[in-house]
Length: 83
Image 1 (tube, helix red, strand yellow):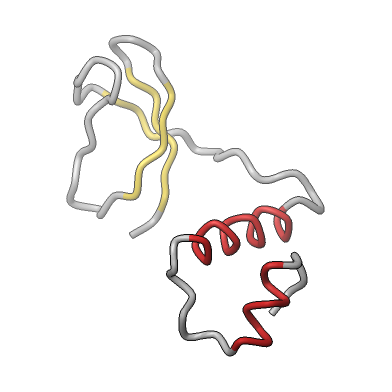
Image 2 (cartoon, one colour):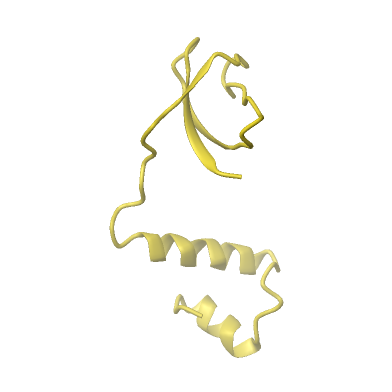
């Protein structure tokens, strides 16, 4: 499922959702289904994508979601180094 940015026509709120082509999301602010898909999504700033990825991996590891990594890989992950 692709991630799309939307704008609500009723309250002008902007939000993003993972949606299938057949689904119509509703606005999280007002619940309206009168929404417009935005053509351009915001991108992560250059050089920050790796930091974001590592941050998300550390958070997942803290929740016990990376148990399939070896102990050495887990230690590198905790230190912020790529696995």
